[in-house]
Image (cartoon, rainbow over all chains, first blue to last red):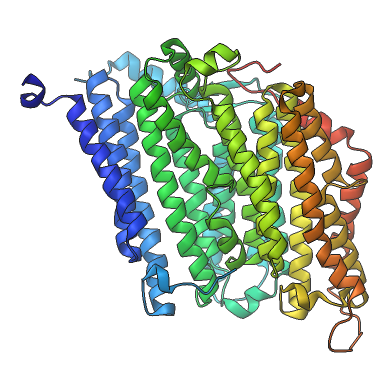
Length: 105
Length: 512
């Protein structure tokens, strides 16, 4: 019962594992480039939660620092990714990754 | 939860930072060069000239001076264990600056840029930022630095891959590179978070010690995180099964970027993998490796065998020379992994030597492919017919580079493969079968590499105009020099071998 009522490390880790799963699921199944990028953000945030939770429960600062840097990197990644996706849309008139196949065997 | 540092502690931190900056001069110099190039681009906007390229070349060459100065410094860690300076890192600093220079030179030769883009803009600045990122990848000793430097390289590479904005193939390559890269680096950082949770450390040396002390108490978590981390590293070196991006990206990207990615970015991944695998993963005795739940040697074995077989076999069907070289680079990732599996001093030396030989022959091959594409406007195998008569020197040079890629004497590639295989066999009969797979797949690769000389020399082109095409005196000279070096170092390889032996020393671990 105590496991359920008090929030502990395991709760955070479970949430982050779910986020990782959802992120991977989105990346694998979706066809829209934007949704794939959203999946990537979920994966990065899963790592973020992990770092913060571990950092909170072992009292060291490194994890919190790491997650700050992940947030910054995720923002930079989104900027570059959206620039590329906009360019793709200009050329192919679509952001559906299955219809973008000018490179073939 | 966290205590504020006292005044004395802050003073100490500042003093330590001041000392650390002294070990960071090449990177600072290159960062200034990056900003300088952006300013030069703003000043020279609109004018299509080689000023940017020349200043990039001069700037990159200038960094050799600072790197050379570092050779006299002692190996050590600085920035609170985030960053190290050792012979291994120095080797890669030379390697990456040199590959940046080559990337600029072959970009200047490529006429596709004149057709596709109006101005070179940030192109050269991004090449420099990639050099900085790769140097940092080879020198990081902390999970956070590894992640940051890897993302710096990846982001620059995404933009460079999609540099031909109006070209559908280039943009598509950028999108594919981006999606695969983002997912695998996300998985890698999740793996890092698990390692951090297990050990409470992000420094590689401390992580290695903590993991060794732990034994097999958390073997399942360690296995999961190892798999996730391998996904990130494997993507960077383009090994099977994380190779899906590489054929498309290599075919779609501007050819100089293809050459740059296939040599420098792969080498950066190898450097990172070696440092991480040697230092952070406890091994040395067989008991430890079986204790920690997952055998990294076993994992790398699977990657290596898969890459060698898949890369060489699928290349057999390729009709586009760039795409064929992409599959061949997957195969070469497999050979590089063989050297890493061996562990120890000899294995590292063999891997570094192989990287040097791969540098020379792959840049050479791509350079000739660019020069040929300038003249015939195509990278298709069938269009190479009759080139032996039209461009005699280019055809001869390409043949030498391909012979070297196969690994036949008297070229540098032969010595590289020889060192890798003898390092494997020095481990006893344990890895004999691996060396056999390596040799067999090299034999397979002979077929597809030799298709190119076959088309160039023995088949006539459909249009019967046998007029010679001259790629220009500078290009001729550079091709001749590269061809000469490939053969020269194949015969007198002692300097390179000594250099790679010197470089196989890492801070935080004694190799034997």
